[in-house]
Length: 272
Image 1 (tube, helix red, strand yellow):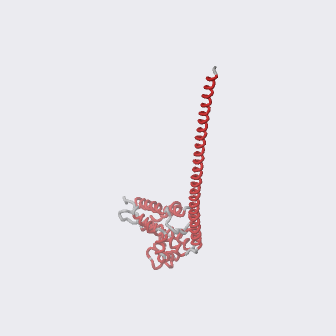
Image 2 (image 1 turned 60 degrees about the vertical axis):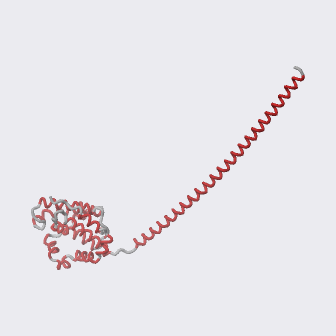
Image 3 (image 1 turned 90 degrees about the vertical axis):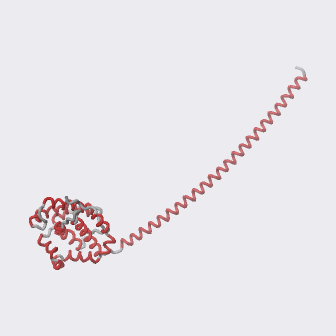
C-alpha cells in the first residue's frame, strides 16, 4: 500500500473518530438532559405527594376533631340522661300510668266489634281478675307491676281479647253476669290473663299468679252498680282511679295512649 493511500485511510479514520466522539458527546448530553428532566419530575412528584399527604392529614385531623366533638356531645347527653334518671320518680304518676294503660286495654277489648256490639260483661270479668292481681299490687307500690308506656304487645293482647269475646259470644247465649255463665267462663278468662295476656305485657310469667284470688260476681257487681260505695269496698282501686283523673294530662303525654287508642279503633273485628 502506497504512503499516500495510507495517509488517506488514516485521515478517514480520524474523521470517523471525531464524528463518533461527537455522537457520544451528543448522546451523553441527551442522556444527561433526560436524567435531569427525570430528576425534576421526581422532585415534582415528591412535592405533589407531600402536598397531598399534608391535605390528607389536615382532612383526617378535621374528621378527628368532628368525632371528638360528637363524642363530647354524646357524653353530655348521657350525663343529662343520667341526671334525669337520677331524679326521683313520682310514684303517684307511674301508678296512674299503669292503671290507665290497663283500663285502656280493657276498654279496647270491650269495644271489639265493627257493628257496635260491646262486651261490658267481659270487662267486668277482667276487672274481677285484675283488681286483686294487678291494681292492688300497683297501689301497694310493687314496682314489678309498673307500666310507664303502652307495651308493644298491648295491641296483640287487645286482638286476642277481642277474639276471646267473639268466641264467648258464639258459644254463650247469655251475658257473663249470669251466674252460670260466670262460673263457667271466669276460670277460662283468668287462665288467659295469667298464661297469655299478662306475660305478653310484662315479658314474663309469674307462677304466683296461679293462686291469685278472683272477686266473686256479687262483689264486682257492687263496683259496677254502686259507685258511692267504691271508696269503702275497693279503697285501693278507688284511689287508683282518682290518680288517673289527677294525672290525666301527664298520662296522655307520656304513655302513648292516644296513638294506642286510635289504632285499636281501626282494628275491631267483624261480629259475624
